[in-house]
Amino acid sequence: MNYFVIILGAILVNNIVLMQFLGICPFLGVSKRLSTAVGMTGAVAFVMVLATIATYLIQVFILNPLGLAFLQTIAFILVIASLVQLVEIILKKVSPALYQALGIFLPLITTNCAILGVAILTIQKEFNLVEGVIFAASNAVGFGLALTIFAGIREHLDMQNVPKGLKGTPIALITAGILAMAFMGFSGLV
Amino acid sequence: MEEDNMAKRESTFLNMFLALFAVTFIAAFTLGFVYELTKDAIDNSKIKAQNEAISKILPEFDRLGDPLKVPDESGSDTLEFFPAYKNDKFVGVAVKTFSKKGFSGFISIMAGIDNSGNFSGYQVLEHAETPGLGSKMESWFSNTEKSGQCIIGKNPGSHQFVVTKDGGDIDAITASTISSRAFLDALVKAYNVYKEKENEISGITGE
Amino acid sequence: MKSPVLPGNNLDVMDHWKNFSKGFIKENPVFVLLLGMCPTLGVTSSAINGLGMGLATTFVLLMSNIVVSLIKNLIPDKVRIPSFIVIIATFVTVVQLIMEAYVPALYESLGLFIPLIVVNCIVLGRAEAFASKNKIFSSALDGLGIGLGFCFALVLLGGIRELLGSGKIFDITVYPESYVTLLFVLAPGAFIVLGYLIAVINLINKEKGKK
Figure 1 (cartoon, each protein chain N blue to C red):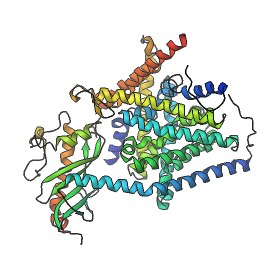
Figure 2 (figure 1 turned 90 degrees about the vertical axis):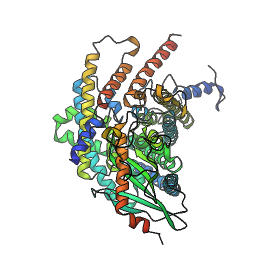
Figure 3 (figure 1 turned 180 degrees about the horizontal axis):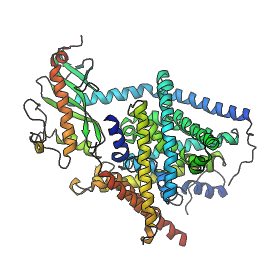
Figure 4 (figure 1 turned 90 degrees about the horizontal axis):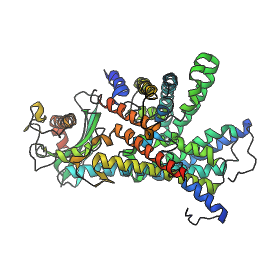
């Protein structure tokens, strides 16, 4: 039951992109085509879960016992940056096919605030490791959901007659606003 | 543009190692220093905020007893009780209570119960509801001019702490029924646990 | 254009002024470069939150630009980015600790977005694109200018949302609450107001370009 609340909460109610405003850069940047949106989601999901596990272990076994919780930000960002590099190197060797699909998105992920955000939130919400992993995975799904819906809408938007001044980013943002309104309908669900 | 022409260090292993080591070393040193510098201020500001909240919601007191942590009905969460005394006489207790039934989940409230068992005040500590609702909650249920919505001087024994829509005695905040339910849920929880432990809590004189 | 008196010889003054002022409209990090969108949307439910976030980011930008420019020749190219990240993260933590100690209420309301300054693309972007190639003074001006431009964008967005959504500006009531449109302080309002603001700034920049 508890897990169910975490999952539903992260995907729909507190959607990471539309309600928490994390990962907006890729949300606006790579959402012009559906295929790139799917690739980005895969890369984010992969790194988000790994990063949450790694940062959780560091917080619990290194920072907390040593009373160094104030080094959280610096420790987490270094872990995430190295993890992204590591994933890139390993993926290249082990699964060239997967690397082909996700490779170009990986360097962008270090500065994706959704990853660091979810890692910090996992600690703040005092989740245990299992809950943390579920939380991270659900957030990745939430990210993917928002991104794919948005990419789908934007593909259609290209063919519409948009007022000249609103072309490009402005209309994309307003569309995101309406999408966020739709997601607000889920509040109070859990 | 004023381009600097001084040669950069080459990327040999030793250079890279030294550079990264130096940067992280200085960073850690700086942070340790700033942490020591701000540590007391951070602790003080937390205690100050808590004491301020307590002093707003209880009758006049001159001393706070040791806080007491009591598990709630589910056993997985705890309520915190801060008994207050004046001239060593128990005048009331501040209860840090919560509800998970808010519109967006968790709400944390500091509620004051006086020595006759009525609510004497409350402060919303934390909520994730609609922005602005926190301040609305603050004024709504403490508005003594509107007896239908005010909870000051009442208790769940004398009045039904349920919104009127659900057949209770308390008017919900306009257009925020769910948040109002959560608010009352937190208060009732505080009251029930207090009643259960009344003797234990009011009996402590802290001496 | 008016140029305030800045250190340096006369020829440089224009350059310095440009380094400083470009961040406001022409190269505004939010409206034009579309960077740092997460905090822009996330904390601007009121003008004061926008200001707090803007100033915190400005401090980090200024300090990291200065330090990066100072040590740019000591850092080998290949470990450039990790070193920059450590420097930025250090200043972010400094801001975090100071805010928690002295402005706890603001710290609470900005919450998660304070540590997230570290992944704000603006900060790393300026370190990499400007400070690692320029002298200290220009780098400091660049950091300050871009930071204040970011601040300006956040206060503007926060002010508009606060005015429409709660009838106040900087917590001062402007019109009664019964006329407000709550939507603007909620998540959708952030996207919508920013969308229209960008459209307006685009128009301004276009008009300027024509002249």
